[in-house]
Image (cartoon, rainbow, N blue to C red):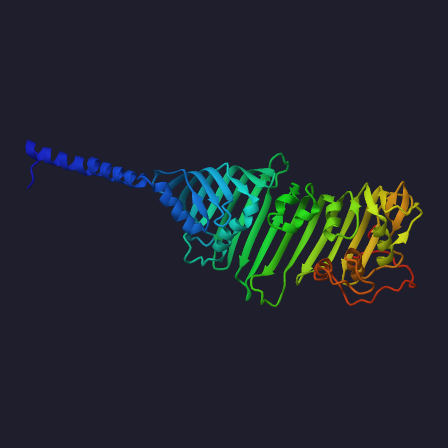
Length: 448
């Protein structure tokens, strides 16, 4: 039996305890720190991240303040083809956590806290490819979902920059769906509802589908910012903004039997009519306008039905556009004195419009004693709404893409419009038929 009475026995026990409880942990900790901070650790970690993300990665330093936590100093992601900086972050902290899912399962989540990240929107497609790979990946073999937060962030879009606050984003993948979501607040914007975007890859149906959702809440988002996702919005001008809701769903495979579908409702403010006219390259039109989209529905890649109101002015319009609108859309000529000068001044441009397979309903909304005025100057009508409603939508294509008499011209603009507008099989309206008031077929009420 071991006796603790002798001095030698006590000394051996104390030495063993000291070696086990003090020396060994110290050596293990020192070795762990030495391995983590060995020269070239930042370069090795940058190379590992580059292989994982598919972009160039540069790091100033890598620190491991405690087990399970990594801190990256001076992180920069760059496009491997152009070398352009995609994302820069002064400090980024990453740690792993176990969170409970809705079904009670424990799931590994990478929690990232970023300090002052800055994103160049010109490389948004390259950054999106990283997220897209996460959505497509098999959730059974993925390492973890990701949650990223930042108190402030900056988006750089050419010479313009946008300051964001309370930024939260992340990815989550299950056997049914893969989701990437972003929420933020615009600097200086009021309202309790943050801007929310969501990308979804739905695997629950026979054909895999993808979906994009946007809800701006009370904030008006610059269309230049959204142009990073939808490049066509640049045509609305540098000061155009959007406030509202939008979702679009499309098949992930081109062979899918159905096309994209979606809905939009909201307001486009500060639309540059000159920039839009320049895209068509046919007429001169200058000024700004606000567009209220009451609803717009897309089915099978085509605008199925839409209703909205346009209000703009003052500005400049070409005589050629006025004559073409009167000819193609059967707009009535007003009492305003229209000279032979090519460019004419206007004070008001206001109308309600309804598009569907039944045709196009137009209703003048200028604030004049005379009803039904679409375009006005000096409180006199330049153009009024058509006497016969509805007008065939194909005439709108002929107006916006001129070049043929009664046939739709084969131009890029007309091809784009024909593939997206609700061109029904309805015959063209007979100008000798009696006048029909412009009304919405959806609810049978007058648009006024």
